[in-house]
Image 1: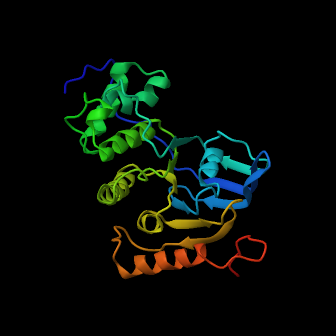
Image 2: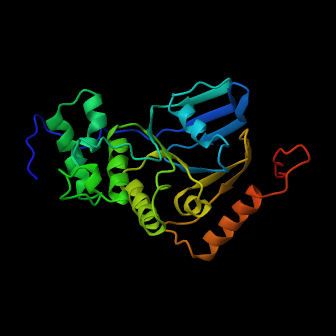
Image 3: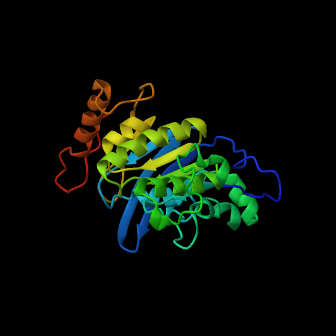
Amino acid sequence: MQIEAEAPVTGPPHVQAAGVEIDDVDVSFGSVAALRGVTLSVAPGEIVAVVGPSGCGKSTLLELVCGLLEPDAGEVRAQPAALMPQRDALLPWLSAIDNAGLALRVAGASRAVAREAAHEHFAAFGLEGFERARPAALSGGMRQRVAFLRTLLAGRPILCLDEPFGALDALTRLQMQRWLADALEREPRTVLLVTHDVEEAVVLADRIVLLSPRPGQVLEILDVGLLRPRARGERAVVELRERALEILVADRSDDGAAKRPSS
């Protein structure tokens, strides 16, 4: 595909690695408490996975980091963050390359400049030859890659990924996990990854934050401490997965609140 650019483009803007500080945060929606007393530090360039049961405030945590919500109590300190929701949210009337460049268009870039910036990454993202395809003509995995490229091209130092592979079949999900690990090696960012898949968290993340049922509280933060790449079946991955699951399904106290592991 030949694209005429109005100005030289070298890809997404250069971004510095950034950290996130969440200090004793509470969030409620009316009478429903979503998060309570959550404290978390994410180091620059670190990948942190957030795991917990449905409704425990995982997505709310990402919205706080992205500045889409304000906490009722506590403080969130973070540089600008880009959110990738579970659904790819591609615009059906735009081509793959125009969907990928949408964040740049919103920021004021011309169509030609946005297309050139996106096109530079299409081969590495396994999308070459599909520049003009509409979303309906793409597989689920390809749609997610377009969505991730759109998020990356936003140029934000922090990426918040909300169940990015939750809607995919098991085989495609496994392939996309490997692809995402490679993509983050090429384009490092500070990443908060929400997932229901504990094994996915172990394979991708540097640390895993385990949240209790609503209101979400930090049960424990596990250091993964394994070299990449990681295979799902390797012993250390399985052991860490089992440890995380043990914490998540631990006995509840009489009042129904999750017990915090002793330190």
